[in-house]
Image (cartoon, rainbow, N blue to C red; front, side, top):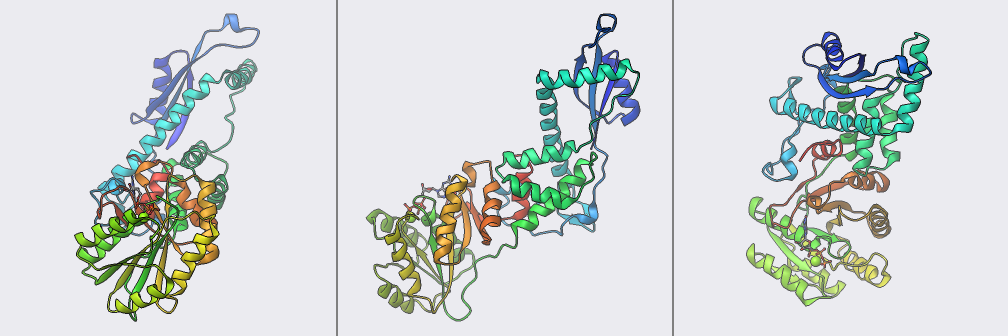
Length: 408
Ligand SMILES: Nc1nc2c(ncn2[C@@H]2O[C@H](COP(=O)(O)OP(=O)(O)OP(=O)(O)O)[C@@H](O)[C@H]2O)c(=O)[nH]1
Ligand SMILES: [Mg+2]
């Protein structure tokens, strides 16, 4: 996208100038009246400054990441963003083109808002106008400040979506852009790719190779551990036809056991309550013919040492088996808490991250923040209370697009 300002005596004249230079496709983004400044201002007429933009269609198609399969969850809110940069034979699909256009429109709208907001900021504007009028008194042409409006805009967008400034700046620095305005598509697709790469590989849960795999769901109270486990258990039992068992070590509350019993009954799968590490060992032995054994744990405060020790001893009891530990965190939790939770659990064992409640927040930057700060693999995301529908593998392309301002 090329963004240019045109100054003329009238709006019509400025529009004609923009059309002549940028062509009939140019979009008018902002028009403002410039009052003359300086000692001769009484003798001067108001001017009109028109900001126009045009998409220059410079797409760096070669840099576009390879096509990824779209998951079967296309009907859900989360996947409504589509596979934006999917391309076949280096050509954008219609869907991709529309999505890019939509994104550019959104960012163009944002830009427009910023231009309008800036014109309300009188101190800045006056300083600039003073400079302009001095310059025009001298008959020297106005010098545009060098800089990357597009990069600034994308930077703001990422920070607004709660990606830490240090990560945003690291991504932008890696682009090694010159200090000149860049085509929007070009910068967007480069930043998009950097984000996708940083989100990393996403593995789906697999069964054990030699015997059952034991899958633990751990995390703070109320983040969605039981619901997430029920979603995955249903998918693996019904869609993948796996042999599964469900355990609950959430013995703090009777209601928790009932909750998991209900899910186990619906999907017709065995369910056991585990009270001690010894029982854990014996029950895993009992269900060793299963592909997956899902283990729900009590929500616990990561600050409570006794609860942490209970959990560690349950996990230790089955150390000879293949296992996967999912730390379930809510995307709505503030970042300092997320980091402290992730750190505490990291001191006990290695884990993969599941982010829940994506439907309750717009700022998904914490997903990437946590991934980068903790160096833990991302896995699933959930976006609602429906079992088993509202879950899917995290799609880095979808998250990257949302971080860059993809619309809902
Ligand atoms: N909006 C939304 N709600 C969710 C999501 N996942 C779970 N919930 C809801 O969050 C609440 C808590 O879910 P649980 O699965 O019981 O959470 P938990 O981590 O097992 O809770 P404790 O066992 O008490 O620690 C329930 O009302 C769920 O329906 C989600 O992705 N989005
Ligand atoms: Mg629970």
